[in-house]
Length: 305
Image 1 (cartoon, rainbow, N blue to C red):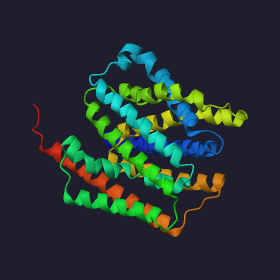
Image 2 (spheres, one colour):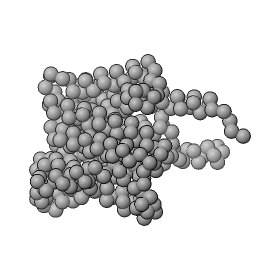
Image 3 (tube, helix red, strand yellow):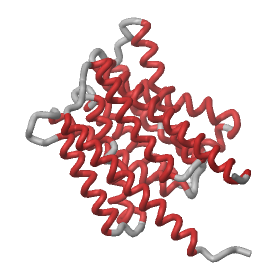
Image 4 (spheres, helix red, strand yellow):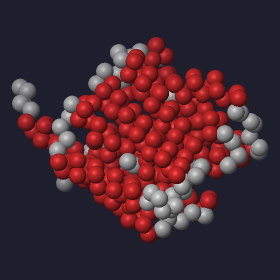
């Protein structure tokens, strides 16, 4: 094995480690949100999540980049829209998760990559072939297997989670559009701006102080866990190809299942597992096709001498 091959293998292992950390941290945050929903208004929980994220990002990036540089953007309109979509996604998810078991909620939110694929044509001008469209349709079929509309298996409030996935998909589309213009640190900061400003004006009407120190710690942890989760995902893709790293993100469903059983006594039935398997398989196929397309585009570029 050459030194280059050894370094590549080490980098990929680092990427997998970061994605596994993200797949562990984010379901823990969601479990805390579901737990707090029993006693506190979703608006108070969302305020804690967005404000914590904003402060965490400032502490992480401002010392090196400087405040002026961190907030400088070439597309302020797009950044504001991204931030509002991020807030809308959390409003839907944090409200809906009170009614839906963790595993099912995680499975439904994984519809976002399929929506990104479906919207990348009209919004980004990318060509979406029949095979990727087929994977999108199959993925949505998997979500229907999980929810089984009309059967009563999943409460009607699950529609909020579909809304969350839709808003998050649009958020990702706009993130792609600004990625070529603004620094990633700037985009991370703006992700929490709308939630912090809007929810800070709303939260006084819904806020009640935590009942005990445990709840207080959970509130404080939301922004840190959310910020760390997104940071781990970004770091993961720095170390390896998406086709290798992405599958480990589906570990969120496994962690959510364990937490859902331990904390709330929820255990998915066989049809939920079938739907999850369909969603994961379709998502992996889309990741594989995307990687192939990028490799083909790279191979067709003329060599610069």
